[in-house]
Length: 77
Image 1 (cartoon, helix red, strand yellow):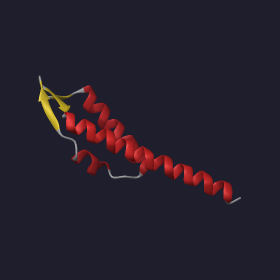
Image 2 (spheres, rainbow, N blue to C red):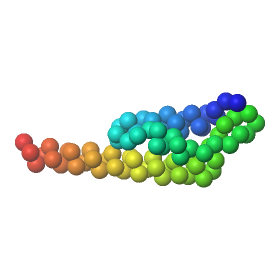
Image 3 (cartoon, rainbow, N blue to C red):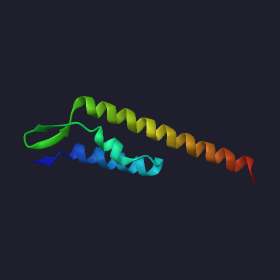
Image 4 (cartoon, rainbow, N blue to C red):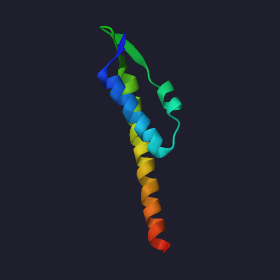
């Protein structure tokens, strides 16, 4: 059995965002639910939806942190 391209892409994207946001990748990977389709492991529909929400949340926090950091840089010469 092999990973589907979509599963690999979601692992990579989740890892990148976890590194940028300082969150633990292990916790995120534990939420992945996969199913076998013709010898390929792919994310279940529910898992895809949950991962998208988690990624959006991590990106939002990252953008908030960067925005806050930029504001602090402008107020503190």
